[in-house]
Length: 68
Image 1 (cartoon, rainbow, N blue to C red):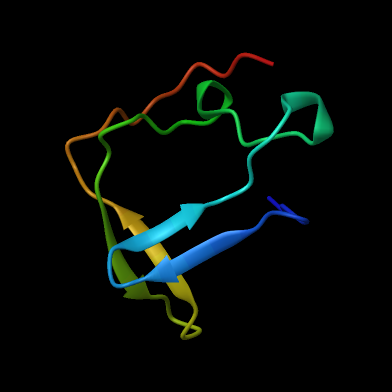
Image 2: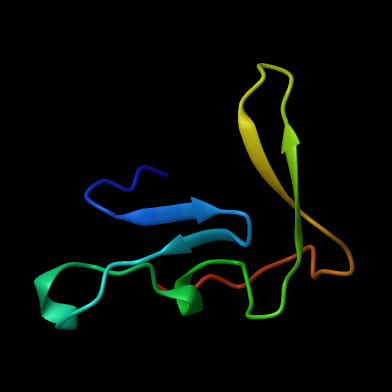
């Protein structure tokens, strides 16, 4: 996925999307439309190409029903 025009902060506490304001101003990431849930945990890793990867930690559901 490609998200552009999103502002975020990274500090010692983590990564946070920091855009706010009227929802009609932009399309925010809607957590209901992605296979993630509030409370999921992630570990910061590097992938085989040395890119930052936030790896989701179990337990998690492996099959998802997407609603568009």
